[in-house]
Image 1 (cartoon, rainbow, N blue to C red):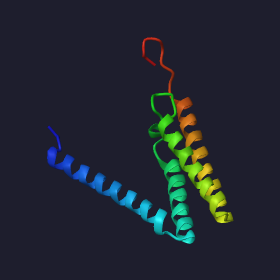
Image 2: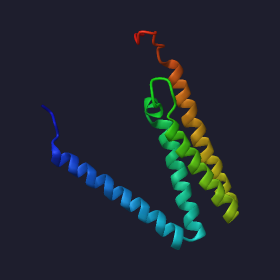
Image 3: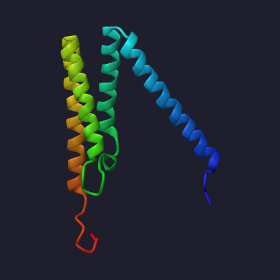
Length: 130
C-alpha cells in the first residue's frame, strides 16, 4: 500500500533525464570548447569522485550476482581509465598521468572490495540453501 504512484516515478524519470542531458552537454562542451587546464580539472574531479564512490559504496552493489563482481561496472571503469590514459598521452602532462594512476587505483579498490565481499558471503549448497 506504500506505492509512491506514477507522479513520483515521473519526477524521478525527469530528474534522471535532466541529469543525463546535463552530463552529456557538459562532456560535449568540454570536448569542443574546454581548455587543457579545464580538462585536467574535470578529469581530476571525475577520478576523485570515482575513487570515493568505489571506496564507500555498499560492497553488494559491486556484484552482479551473489558471488560475481559486476562485469559491466568494471568494464566501464576500465574504459574510463583507458580514456584518461589516452588523454594523458595525447595532452602529455604529468598531471593527467597522475590522474590516470588515481583512476586505476579507484578500479583496483572497487574490484578488491567486490572480491572481498564475495568471499565473506556464505556458500550456498546445491539446493540453494546456505
